Amino acid sequence: MEKIILFASDQWLLVTALAAAIWALAWLENRRAGTSLTPHELTAMINSASAVVVDLRDKAAFDTGHVVDSVNIPFNQWQAQHKADGGGDIQHYKGKALVLVCKLGQQSSHVGRRLAAEDFDGIYRLGGGIGEWQAAQMPLVKS
Image (tube, rainbow, N blue to C red; front, side, top):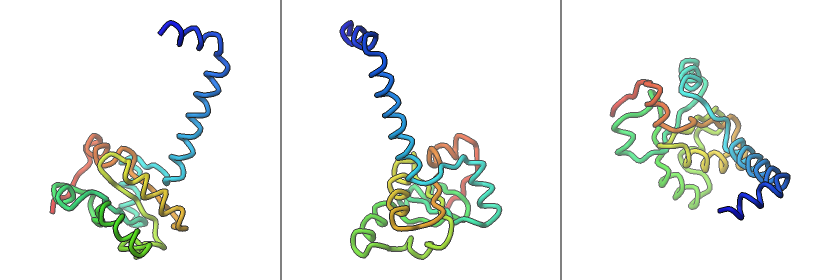
């Protein structure tokens, strides 16, 4: 541990450059996955009816509670359809703004990057997933 501290203090410029490069890479990857929305920003988009909310959780999780007017396309189903024919159910919403929602935000980032690469416009994702939605004490609709 002492050697790491000595190295970091001797090579502070390199350590700082490495930290900045890691931060920049994470920031760029995050931007490619679509714009991250807070629960309140998502509510504004839902109220203006300008976006389609796509819930990527499995059917059982979706039935226990989801964002109002959201469409359930489970991640595994999307992945299988995407590999099979390059599209799937999500292709129906290509001309609209899409808000991707999952449990914690990882799956929506993955799907967002893939859809952005396929020239989908207006890709958004709920930052922190449905967990963040619940933490903000926003309402869930049960099926």
